[in-house]
Length: 74
Image (cartoon, rainbow, N blue to C red; front, side, top):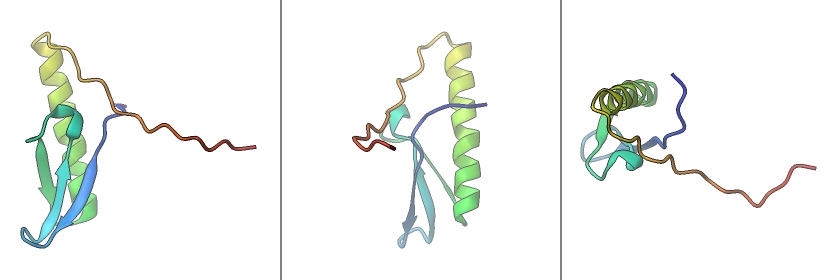
């Protein structure tokens, strides 16, 4: 499934793992992983479940945040 939602992955010294935030889905939408790869995989799985659940419940999907660049490739 292709989506364009933000996945923020940061190391947490306190938790001793990678913590993932999914900002479009709310302040408290997080997952984690012991490795960066595991954190990313978990984030993708959570996103798929969130999208599926919203669609099943007839709820609108949040608008993906996009990064606007002023750089142009010549």
